[in-house]
Image 1 (cartoon, rainbow over the protein chains, first blue to last red):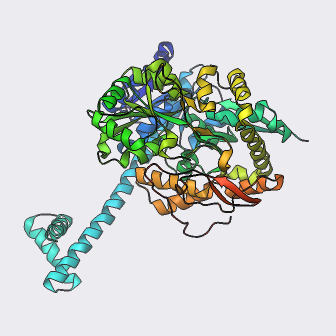
Image 2: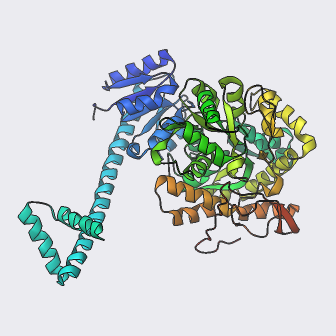
Length: 194
Length: 396
């Protein structure tokens, strides 16, 4: 369990906010910020960059969070929510659909913990998928760049493909750089000369 | 007749009127439906409750079925738009200080000219314009995009979009959190009355026929409860037809004011229903034709081409491939189901399910199942025409 997660709680009622803070602390989550003023959500999220946001499912300010979560860098941030009733079906459906619902029937601390754990597990899984996906995308882009660089060399020097690649690799080794960096430099200069 | 319950989510806006009228004037009951209107605190909550099956149907922003079907933002789900509930009905307003600077830059305060308003707006801006919209996937956002992007002064960092719940728009403007907003009525009129806002344009000045709200249901629900969907379509059709009759407007305002669904005073409901918009405190109302359409000009018909336009805009804003997005969107606007439900009761239906969006600068007669019908105007302010035929023709 990663207890270093930064949590933002959006809660206008000070008493309730206090209860949630207590529950979080007793669960081992210490890095918690509470924002009561709805108008400050955007600003606060930008400032502290929380890993998880807890907000009442009935809060109209959820739509402001929606804006933040579709902003490019925040795609993976989970939004866990308070569902202020015991509704097992809804909770189950929400969690299996990927939302991290959070049941606070009279704010029982023992119920906060498992749901938050689910939220964090999901967050970690999503981050992993996200980084795997960007690695895969990166590899694809790299391969295209290398192919273009090979093409440029084949054309300019009249050499076959394997010789072009060998030349790229040798240049990279001689200069102590990566093949992709050499290829990128070549493609960039070719674009400049066009 | 067996009575079927339909749990329908809505947000308290004037354009939820078709659902309120369908319930209050018993159009739903006549179709054997018990229409339970359930107020939602936010569009995110409405979306999640629909996706999680706690709602059967919902009053939705027209881009929501498209964005949900594309899996963008929050819970993904295949959502069908059975019909358009309303066309137009939004306003763009400016804070007192921006409006004053716009006037100084030569803006005529005419509530009519997007190109001139954009000139003045960019001249008045000092730094990124902070613009409030109710939800990232909304016609408000798309209209702003279409309007501002066409201006030579526009760059990606010249605007900053902020989601603000509609009831907070007036306050956010007053607290200097926003320079501009686009919102559905009554919240523009409220911002004028309480927040010192000046209304700059009606949404209809940017696009004369913008589908604003749709009736959304889960795609699996349309399969398993087709009869219920048909009954719901008929009930809401009767309600929108009733709403657009001039004689019924005073009574409509009365019902909307009295029903517990909106909880808004008469003076903020009236402008949207009558199209007489007070653009700044103390002014004479501006007569705004087609400010909000519930039924006229085949307003309820879910054109596949409207869905394609929405998808093209969303694809552009969120960096997804436009082709597949447009195809997915087309199939989520259920013109086929609309025809199946309303054809047998003699409703006039357009001959095609796609049109060139933006091609009609005037009212135009087109062929229909009963001869011909009047459509349009539907022009964009910059004369753009949106034509992107589907990859493969859809049935109907």
